[in-house]
Image (tube, rainbow, N blue to C red; front, top):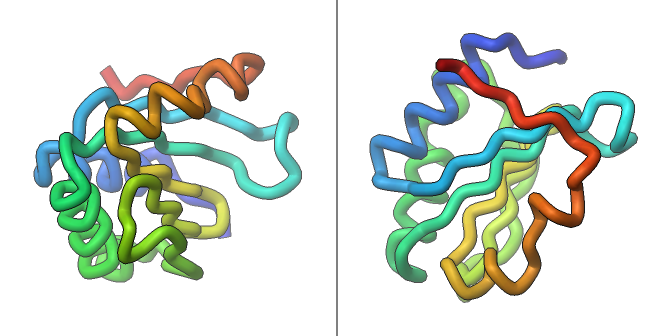
Length: 114
């Protein structure tokens, strides 16, 4: 099932409701065989990373976005939320700086809903 722009925007809104910051949505179509989009998000602390993840776990099914798997709990320095066509990476600032996924996937176009 391919996610609509509206669903993607709603996922971004959910993350922002829980004060996730530095959101970057990467279009990986034609680059990755695993997923179509990466959403990379920073939570200020492990507690906030958990709160964002728990909120997504609760709300995604209401948007018609499948929740296939969650990895990285309970440590919550980097939590991966697998939604099939969308993979959400919720990270602490230190983890995000260290792994620098935006640089690693530098060929991907950033998606904007401005």
